[in-house]
Image (cartoon, rainbow, N blue to C red):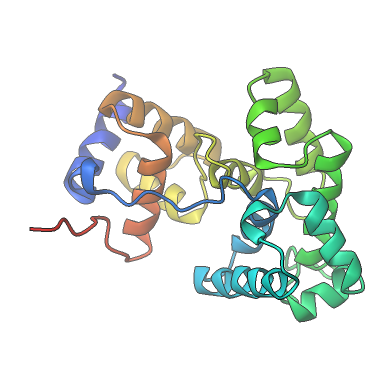
Length: 230
């Protein structure tokens, strides 16, 4: 175990409590549509805002007699189209947040539509398709490159998070997780932070998704431990 991993491991033991009581991130194991929506809207936003968007999407689909929990990206693109395109979809389902603070940056709803189109073009329509695709490293790299070419997604954070939401083990090295790792081991970039979290999970015998989520909850001031019935 490297010194950085040992240091981060000690910090996690100190701060995060019993791994058996960590919350498991909910995710959307059968809904790639919601993985895409959540991952892209989650950056730079309070998560309560994302939850409201997901609730509106689910409500709209339920009113149609459909189940958002099984929607793939084909259904997401149909939903965007029937509401009049990404701009109108942003007003009715999403919100009008841009992909970045740069002047003229496109709306996140446009990035969502483009990410969905990228996945369809690569033969990926469902969360099951994505889980199968990323088992091949070459295909995974191709999908990542295409996703990161979508406006505002260059860092790869939303790509990693979309995979986590689809129940693919990984680390979302956003500002919360990066901040925790830097405080524990010193300044590192997001890629190194993700590497350290993965190595720490392996060293501790913990699930990497669960560790990533526990760190995120700790940094955001949420409880890290589930209540256990007496």
